[in-house]
Length: 337
Image (cartoon, rainbow, N blue to C red; front, side):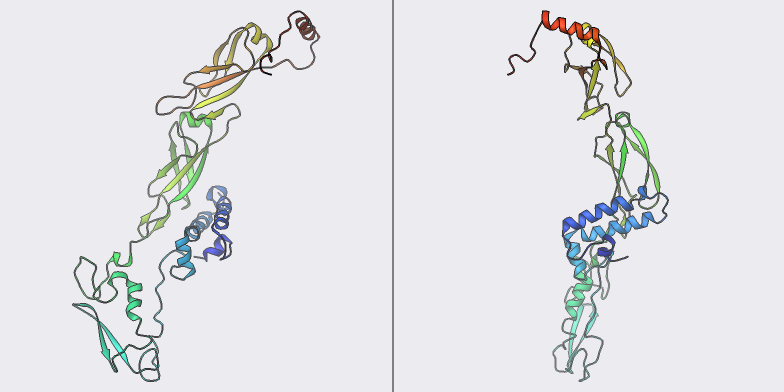
């Protein structure tokens, strides 16, 4: 595993915002869906997620910078400095001939004196080193876990802290508005390289997630989950407002004046709508149940009438409007100024 700073391409002095920005940029570039022909894409993406899991968490970042965890987030065992060399006086770790012995027995960790009775420079911190390295089973009378039996030099799994679980991974899937209304399925490529068919239920909102248990990246405690974030693509016809939809409905001048039947597109296909005579532009018609499905029932579709004049100049229409202006003038803006 490479250095997380190298993976993300940031300096060690990088701020959290810069680290997050670098991760987002690289996630888009390295995502397996964006590199379907690269067999190493899943591995690169997994490496990126591991790096961000460390540097994106301030506590883990401090631990990595201090050398307490490695590039995979695993604890690093401290070195036994000063315990390996004999000093000039025949003792361990310093120029002093005094030394101590450390033994394990029925009573747990035992400390015995030798020589002049004091610990040498290298051995003095050995008990603390064991505490750091082995947790509760390390030193003093803590020869066994609290509540457990003492059995000499024996470590049980949780003496080293809880094993880390797998890592969750977020994958994006984009569906159309019609698919959101009716439900659909998508074939999604996971960071592990595996492809799965995901069923997306009808009525799922934009940004909501589907969880695939145990399909994430592995860890010593098992696999994480895959969280599929569903995005609904914009539709050129409809505007979403929660479960309701809005649409602009173009009508002719004669349909506005005389009324008539017009076809209105919906997610279930076009339906017929009656335009009453004298309909003004901006009038809103409500089509119940023609919006997006939800738990309490489907939303509605609101169609706003917009009067559209024919293209080009029409002398007959222009003459009619001049006659109308002279014989039947009216001001729709009166009272609003």
